[in-house]
Length: 494
Image (cartoon, rainbow, N blue to C red):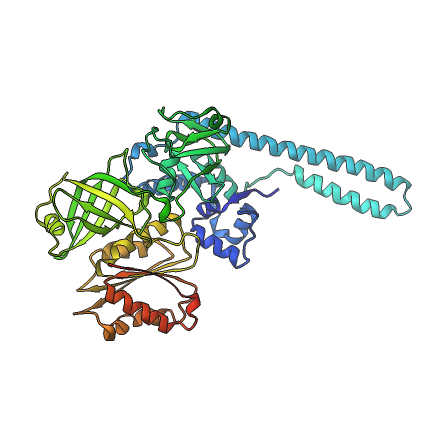
């Protein structure tokens, strides 16, 4: 019986994105069984994914390394290897599964033996003994194959079993989302670090907003909590995601934000963590929120910053929701009082109030279409948030970033090049311009994009920049595309 695994686990085993695996299913190169795929089919489709026995530990080290990268600025202590209890429980789960499989094999042998005896008896009284002799030979061959020792176990099956020891998988029944719990992370931390908009409040066991229902699998409480469940909730296996980790693979029911309407308005006091001037006109500001009152937002949204009597300033968030304690902004120099304060009077650990989030310039997570991002100057800020989120979710078949910029090169040029080098499905194209952008030279600026994509239908296009740039780009894209109904443009004017 072939082992079925989830798309997320299969993608991790062969080292590709979940979106790339979905494309193979869409192209009928891989069969899917209710969202799962066979390891045998995966090995046939990706023969190079086979690994030698002495490479398994090295591969596990890579898995841990990737977990650390996903964690961004979170505490490394939460990413240590699972404790002995967790490891023992996961090994016990795999042992039970192995014993169950052995019982099934023994039952199959007994069934075949019974059928063989029946056929032998029928052959003695039949007028066509040759037919029964052929059937008997088929069954003998089947029994012999079952008893032949497996000299070389399937490499992906070995790798999958080891992965199940190192990281438990969480499947959210109501949304179909999946993620892995690395080390001793809580289920909430693991879900947030992989880009999912799980519902939560204090993340400290007090408010109960991260309540979820355990359907199958085993969890373990990692810390006490003050929130009190009703007797009805206890009987239905409800628990707090912030206070529990996954021991084995689990299936849960949990609330997630499906749109910007599901994210409540928050008022949080953050502190200046770092301010770095990348060019004469662009400052990167990083604010840190309290651990027990972090900012919930969707990639691409805005917030309003305020301090004392200064005029408040609305800005797009440039960082990923997967690291909700560290909020980043890209600030273009201007005469706005708040921006003057940032450039001239800002001090480390200054308190800045954050109100929000607002805005609907967010990723369409229900679509796996290729994504084209078009950023004009500091319109790159929310695009950066969307890219980080899309990469964390392994969202799209491929991503192409066009950064239209004034000057020698974009202010985060090195980061974009690093993405292009590291990600197989990411392309980056800076497009320089001089002077002011108008209706005449916008067409010239976008000739590169038009040349790359003669047909831009069935792609998700996200563009952000000054109002005149965005408006002119929308008109060019509409004129360029014959079938306007298939053109999916998400635009933000800043």
